[in-house]
Image 1 (cartoon, helix red, strand yellow):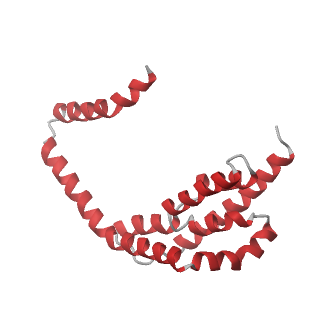
Image 2 (cartoon, one colour):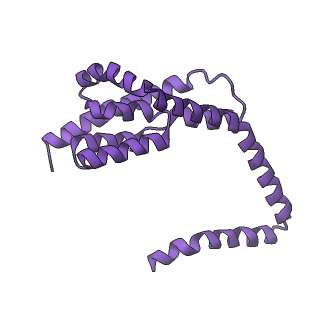
Length: 177
């Protein structure tokens, strides 16, 4: 029974929207076309930002800069208790969702999802955001060029999440329930 709910959810929602529109005498096709046009315009507005971000991430990975930065920052990571294996994930997560998922998958294969590395990585993936991608999409879609404190605030939240992930996993390892 529950498996059928997912199959029928979207058609039922579409049906309700159509019936509501007809009852309220809304010109459904015209409204649909207007919405599709606005969606396409938004896509065109954010495309340059997204293309630039994708190129930058690809260059960062291919050039080896990520590995160099990881080795540079690893001593600091060790001091705060972050396993060095997670440093590439912590660096890449604010930049690329798909790149960080690939790193997470590799961490799970090597260390396991229930290891300390796997648990910290899981919290980081679940509680942080692809900051630069999100900023490019949302700010680019409404034409904001000066993000002021948006990026700094988001990166501070991401860093705080990493620290909290370390503390939570260490707490759970000491006080296993």
